[in-house]
Length: 150
Image 1 (tube, rainbow, N blue to C red):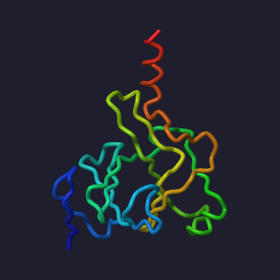
Image 2: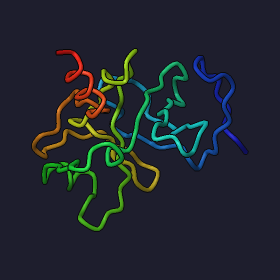
Image 3: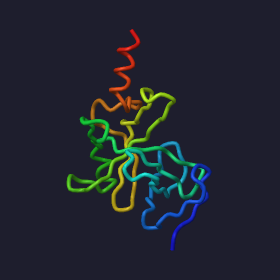
Image 4: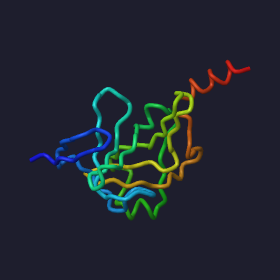
């Protein structure tokens, strides 16, 4: 049996209940504990993390490794223990995206990635150095735009 939500952004959406991600601690600054990853194009680097509990909430996300070759996640020992993570845990990583009118202004939140495994998700504070809250997502576009602005 499919789970049906009425999304203001996407209209009527059917979700496989097995694909719902439980966020026991929620997401920073947002309500809802059950979310689903949605995409209309499987080849797109972007997905929408859509709240099942409150269909008015949805966030664009992406796999940061597709945009940042140097991206890594480090969690505190306390977070690792609390979440049951170790070096063998296979985790999908997403970062939230802030879209803008120009590609050069798109940013990704590398500081608070979302970790997903076994139907559970957690947003953590990334302890790895160099992970900005608003990292340019299309750095090459931003660099080219800055170079052309002289």
